[in-house]
Each structure stands twice: as C-alpha cells, then as structure tokens.
Image (tube, rainbow, N blue to C red):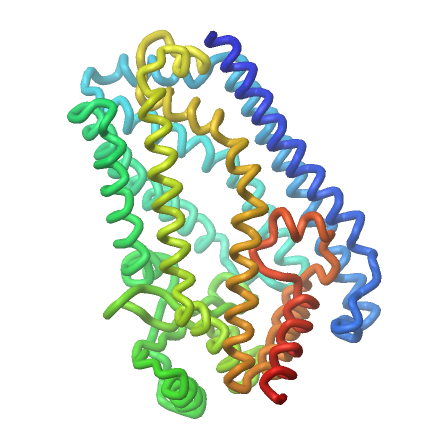
Length: 416
C-alpha cells in the first residue's frame, strides 16, 4: 500500500508540474495576441518590446526554477529522504514535539536555500536590468534571513501546538487545532502591519497636506472613520507601487507605498483607495479569512481520519509512525483538490475585484481609477494579453482590459 501511495504522490506532483508548465506556455504563446482596444497606446513600440522581453525573461527563469523544484522533489521522494530526515530527528532527541519542530526547521531551511539563487537572480539581474530594483545586497540577505526566521518560528510554534493537541486529544485534535489556527490567522490579520511589516519596511503616518486631505474627504464620503493612514517605504525594495487596507476593528489602517506618489496624481491615488475601501465595505477580507478557516478545518478533519495510517509515513521512506511525515504525505495526496478548486477560488476573487471597482466608480472615481490602473500596469510592464484559460484558472484579478470595460459599464449605469 505504501508503494501505491508513493506512486500516487509522484503522479500528483507531476500533474501539478504539467498543469503549471502548460499554463505558463499558453501565456507565453498568447503574449503577441493583439492588444485590446481599451489598452491601445499604453505602450509605445519600444516599450512594448521591452515589456515582451521582460515577460519572456521571467518566464524562462520561472521554468528553470519549476524544473529544478520538480526534479529535486522526485529525488527526495524516490530516495525516501524525508523518511531519512525524520529518523535523524528522532536520533537527535527523544522528545516527540522537538522531533517535529526539528524536521520542520530543516525542511524550511532546505526550501529557502533552494529558492534563494532564483530570488537573487530575479532581483539583481532581471529587476535590475529593467529598472525596478532598489534593493541592496545587504537588504536582500537581511530580509532573507529575517523571512526565514519569522516564518520558521511561527510555523514551528503553530506545529508544536497542533502536535501537542494531537497527543492530548487523539483523532479529535482537529477540532481544537482548527480553533488554534483560526485564532492564529485572525491575530495576524489584525496585527500583521504592526508586528511583521516593521521588520522589513518603515511605516510612518501620512503627513498633513493635499493628499491626506483628499483621502480623508473621500473616506468621510464613504461613511468611514479610518484615521490611521501610513506611508511605507516600498522604494527601499522596488520602484513598483501598491496600496492596501489591513487589520480589523481598532487595528485597521490604510497603507500607501511611497512610490505611488511618484507615479500617480492625488485623484488617482484616492481612486485606488476607493477600490480598496470597496473591498472593506463588502467585507472581502473577512470572507476570505472565513473561507481559509473553513478550508483549514476540512483539511484537518480529513487528515485526522488518516493520521494513524502507517502507510502515509512509509510512503515517504519512514520506518516508524510519524505525525509530521503523515502530514507531509497527506498534503501531497490532497494537492489535486487544490488544482480542482483553483478556478472556483479565482472566480470568487475576480468577482470581489469587480465589486470593488464598481464601488469606486459609483463614487465618481471610475475614470481616475482607470488612468491610475493604466499607469501602474505601464510602469510594471504588465502583460496586457494573458491567455483566457490562464485568467479563468489562475488569475485572482480580472485583466486590465476587463476591469476597464466593467468600470465604464458602471459609469454609464450611474449616469443614466
């Protein structure tokens, strides 16, 4: 049975690789498709060639990274290296929870080390070549270390608690583990901007002036009492721009990248924030969080039915019962569910984006939002012609052309 499970895992890993590769290939082939009428003139001839070069370069590096990851995964599975690692952790300590944490730390370290060369090349070769990078080598390595430490500590603490719950409650652990995970997710949704972001970027209150007055007036017209408006030094890493709402209740805040002011007018920035406030108004963040908690609960429940099956760790080369090996094997076996759900979750996300755009348009920011989105897309050298199948399957946002058409429909309705 263990060999059958291993073959299934290999088949599912291969399926994921093939699906990702085919979608990437389709997108590459579709790049030369005629630009939609709504976007004509966004790039001049020279900039359009530059955009195509940027996309192809990223696609090539992404393909190499995907092939390396796939090959390493097959080697790890074929030689039972995860089982070997589990045995090593058990040899280093007799405390079960420390065995789980040790496995997790080494597993995370391996994945981080494998990904670093590609991240480095992307930052200092591709992004540098096309004028986006502002990250120094010192910042890159410090951020890499901090990212590893933060993600490893958080995942180790969470996994340690989940494993303790398993030891305490047996197969019923999934109920308590869901509650713990839900509290964990809600806490970081509220405090992410306060606790994690400052480790990588500096946030300062938006100073008094025309932009703050424009944002405050717009928020008042939306019926909002947002007071915390911050500027983040995104230019420390890249010239690309962004803005977002974060947090819940008293911890909610607006965050603007400093690069936005370099690219957009105050009216366009307010329009982008009107879109973000549309998400807040429709409680999209809350809905997304709730959906994530439900998915965690479903995954933990199904896993609780299989956690004691000795074939799961054996499929990965384990020679004894192992909670962490069973969890890794389960996540790999459960991966096709994610492939099947991707189109549905993408569709839900795109619908939320349309609603947020319509909210901005209904408050008179439609054309300013369109011009702002065009500027962001032009500066970022965005792909204006993604393949329709890729959009349907993977895109969390509608294409720029789709968004512009929908915003103008909303404008016409509001003017009738």
